[in-house]
Length: 237
Image 1: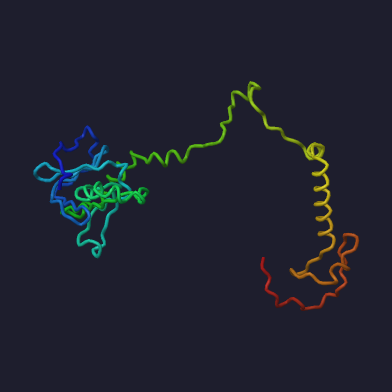
Image 2: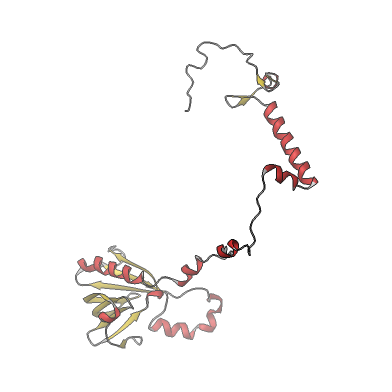
C-alpha cells in the first residue's frame, strides 16, 4: 500500500517498551504482511521484512484492546482503532471531499489488528501500549479540567486589596431586607406556623378529628388505647 514507507525502527532513545517479531498487521480487514511491531513511548510502529512499514501517533489512537473473540476475527490479536485514514481510503476521502461537506464533523476511523505468532505475548503488548499512551494525554481532556471562574487572590485579600465577601447574622440580615422582602418573610413564617399547628398526623394519615385534638399547640389524646390494637402491625425501624 502507498502509505507504507521506509524508516529506521524506534530504539531505546525513543523509549522502546516492547518489540514483537512475527506479527501480522491487518488494516480494515486487509493483510499488510508479517513483520515486527515496535511499541515505543514516542510512537507505535510496524515494519515488514523489507523495511517498509508505518507509524501511529498515540494522540490519534482512540482505542486499543486485546481481542479474543474468534467470531470477530479468527485469531487473537491486539486491536487498535485510529482516528485517521490510510492507504486507498485516504485517496478516496480526498477525491470525495467536495461531496462530504455535510459530514465534516464525522471523524475518520481505521482499524488495525496486530496478530503475533505467539499469542501469549498479547498481555505484554497491551500493557506496553497502556503505559506509552498514558504519556500522551488528550489535550481536550486537560482543557476540560480548567476552571473558568474567577481566581481567589489570597495575597491581595490579605493586603486588603481584594473584594471580601460580606456575611450577616440573622438580625443583621433582617435589617438589610427591603419592605417587600420583609413582607414575604412574614408571610412564609405565618404559613409555616399555621401548617404546624393545624395538622396532626398519625401513621401517616390525617383525620378530621386531628385538628380538634390539637389545642394550643398541645397534643390531646382523646382516643382510648385498645389492647392488642397494633400487635400484628409490621413496623419499620
